[in-house]
Amino acid sequence: MLPAFAEQARVWAERLDLPLEGEAEFALQLGADGLQLAELGPQAPGPVRVDFVEGAVAHRRLYGGGSGQMIAKAVGVQPGVRPSVLDATAGLGRDSFVLASLGCAVTMSERQPIIAALLEDGLARAARDAEVAGIAAQMRLLQGNAIELMRDWQGEPPQVIYLDPMFPHRDKSALVKKEMRLFRPLVGDDLDAPALLQAALALASHRVVVKRPRKAPVIDGAKPSYALEGKSSRYDIYPKKALKP
Image (cartoon, rainbow, N blue to C red; front, side):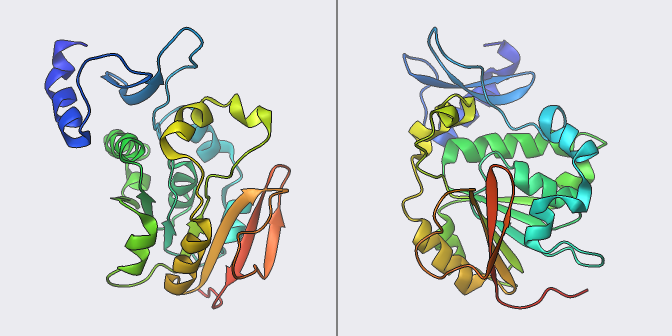
């Protein structure tokens, strides 16, 4: 590690209760490009980090179709309407960033401490970039169990709660994605998805949106009123009240 990052690395290690050295299957690495999670070993894919400035997220921001995107329609973005959104399963924050770039105020919740650290680092770097600082300012991060956060919510409830639970994939193609390879050992499957949905329905003032693989069953519990389907995924919509300008 470069000496310039030694102190920052020590702070992260202390915060996350991780050793600074030693043998491991995964490593949280810090360098000029920020914080990243890497699998170690000869067959390991490349590292993963949260990058709201460049790469796929930047391309989607510039050329992704704006408010015509399916996720925008799912959460109810329309002329004069930019709902406040709680992304209760934030992951790498890509969907949160899309919604913030469209003008929604987005709260992200992530329960896995290492993924939350990647998000925190990505947000900090975005805040220092002139092009996306305004978008980053629309996003805030809460680290903790989303079900508990929703049950104990203080203040104005989010108009829309967005859920994208980790699905127990059987499809081998999902395993080749490096994010899946890295995150599944950390996160596992969201077996508490029904409780997550129930808490979201109790809190959201206007609607709950659940992203699922296109052919996946709906989450156990209340049934969605309708769904928006794409090529590989679908958005199950649970409306409570109409979103109006």
